Image (cartoon, rainbow, N blue to C red):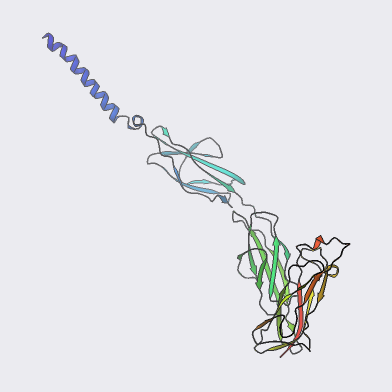
Length: 326
């Protein structure tokens, strides 16, 4: 009897330990396992640089977890996906998100972006087609007061296309008004107001009404040195033309302004004349020098007592006129 009496407490003690183990294994799985909560994942968001003062996020997290969010360092508060923000100020913003599951909090998931909904300044057109112009090929140049911009151009009221300065395009050969516009685009996609230029296009005509156009350019002007103008005569007619006169004029001032033509430039005309005729086949082009006709020439006048630094990097409008017959 004495031996049996002592055996009962021992059996009860073993049973108590077994029950405690069951509670430890089955009653508290998250706290006892020591595993962390997976941080939430941002699955959609605004771009790094956004042109909108609103922002929407979608977030995925572990099943059963609840989210807490903080915008720009504010106190974390309960939130849910999708998240929406409106009326955001210009500048940088940061969203931080955590997940909470069974009393445990995940690491923060963060995303930073910049709100920029302010349009950039309009480009400043510094070189445009001469007005009037008798050349089919035109050049536009511009600058901008803001760095890091890209540009789009619309020649002849056409669709906007990506472009860089200088931009060259060939206009139609019909007389009348012609148009060029350029606008700036910033990294957030904001568009500036367009800068535009309108000019008249007039073909050089003979008494018989046969038109032709001329394209030309000259580079590398330095004081005292004559430079040839690379000139090409284009014949849009269905028959050959005989060009008996070709004259080049230069706009009165440079673009940007400051280098006056009358003071700083000299011209020598092509030798095209009734005695030196340039024949251009139907629908074809001829580049000077050809058929005994020389190129026009331009020289930057050497003015030893005048500071001509104002002429550095400047452009000039070349204006062509002439006479042709069939």
